[in-house]
Length: 583
Image (cartoon, rainbow, N blue to C red; front, side):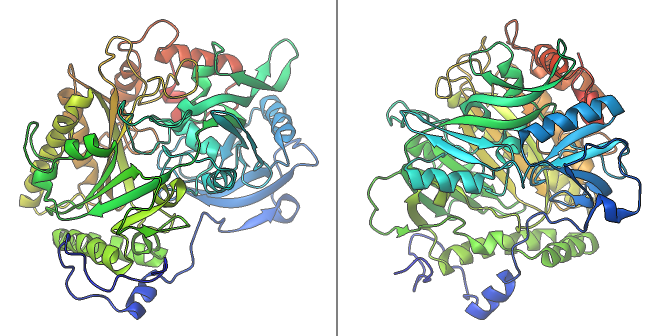
């Protein structure tokens, strides 16, 4: 059987999906061209007609273009965008911006929800700096562990491919490869997986965020003695480096070197036959719980369809030889039924939900059924291949949801309790809203579980200060991070109120025996006006979460001080960062 041939029968281990969709219907549903971020227009500065920024450095291409983030909620109209040919151009741009009182914001693939780069609307005195054309070089260095050095605009797809060709592979990385390496480091990108003493991992394997794998990085910083900006390389053992490992875009990283282990073959098994009430059962339950699956292989993910009892559980294991019954795959993105949704179809689903909110439970049940049918049709229940081919499974063409996201730091023994309590609260709130005729969530809930940053498996040196997965010195038993994402279409009635209530509950509930932190690239600090508007949480609550249990030099204010010292004019800042990163 080849990679593209569907299974001839439904696996007896899984429920029957019902009538199988025809091949023609599947192709029609998934046939639109893949869509990454593409400017609505791009005009060179000389063709715009509007005056370019004063004194803009000659020799650096400047264009006028529109920008829209992945979910379509952050739109910048006709923003100036520079296309540097290399790191030296970024230094020149920084000197110009400081002298003129302008700001520079690095732009990778734009796959984020948080407006760290810029707020929606018009942004005067702002130049985006597109890293995806002139800052994409990748090089490798052998060893145990080996390292990969990539410029800021190199995508994870390109890095994974280069590593695989050389016999290496990153496993603890996001499911989407259409993400630049600098963008991923800026917000603490991560995968799923925890270390297990019973299953030794190759040297260089990471189990927290990608930021914990950094050996060194090069950033544009202010040199007060010279009175200009310069490129400076920060090595992992230096005192200032932990602030740069996960900087939230408060600096401009031009190049990064990551540790990378030898490649491994991964088996990824899916199942949809375990009810949510069993998978998310109370701690100590004897059923097929998530904690039992985590203990079995160390690497799991759950996609739960709210209003249903049907989660999609994925479980990875290291398998040097192809297991009987598995299907070998030699390329990533093995689930076309989830990652190739035309934007028009995504907008249609969104509009239907707005007009027919009461149909939300049926819509979610249909999505759950489609997942089961798709796994069968594509013969994807049991996959085996090199690491990137099962780790990367989400394209930027899936449903364009808004994501809310938080991280719970806890002990490994408390993972089931963390997940059970979240699921119970979530379903209870959904039921209460439904009684009012409100359906605030029409997307998936995603759960991933990682180790902590600084847990001894990353690069040598202090872990990133601003990482949601950073370990606490006073609680060495809190060795695990549980990541929750709740998704819904932008503009869904009741969504803000629902997620605000969920966040406030989680802040008080995960306290003492665990701790809640934000997942920076998602929605958090929900106020009455939406995410990122709860001023007390932004100004005190979240900063305090990065102070508790920390020693001198590793607290929130220490990171802010380092970033401010290397960019005192805040050339690399934005309104949200100005509000958040204060002491």
